[in-house]
Image (cartoon, rainbow, N blue to C red; front, side, top):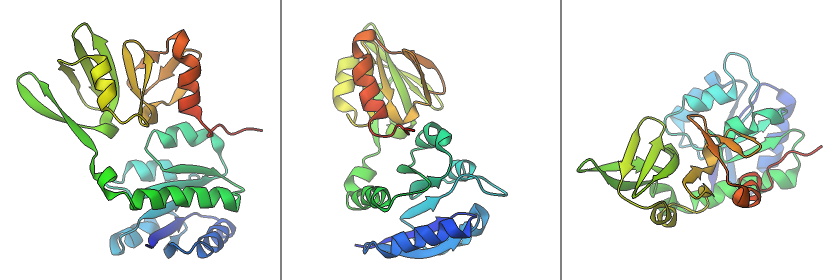
Length: 233
């Protein structure tokens, strides 16, 4: 299985490094390079691209804004000199975030993630669930559900565009959501890990709200959210 990839970076040296890395991985096929996202659009139109290696700080349009504008993006692996955009990038569901200078073994790890996604089409197609709300059945995309809040015998689902009150328990919802994507942070709250933008003490900023983490769950939540993604000195 080959993954078609493109490199978008305004620095010739950075493109050269990524090109040489990609050439050393047998399941990668480099379909093209571009020095800014606008020049990459024809590449995306002409090819079925599986992976984009994307810089952030570029002229005309930066990488973050470019990802926001994609309607059905392939796997995005950020390659940047700036660690401070990591939370924002993960909020856009990028696959991985590599900080320059990039070690080859770290590059390989990111590419293996992309290969795992490509090898699991069933998992990528299972991107939604259904709930009954106001006597009709509503479709909810996992990547649009930001958090859920328990309210007596009901649960309020907060998505990027709407609120849905459904007749389920928070425990029942937790058991049916993907464990790797959603985490219980309080007896009354489940949060989409990818929507967490920042952590301030016991409070998670998920963009549309600030959710409190209970003291007894804080260590577990921090471990699940941060994992090995903390950039250290």
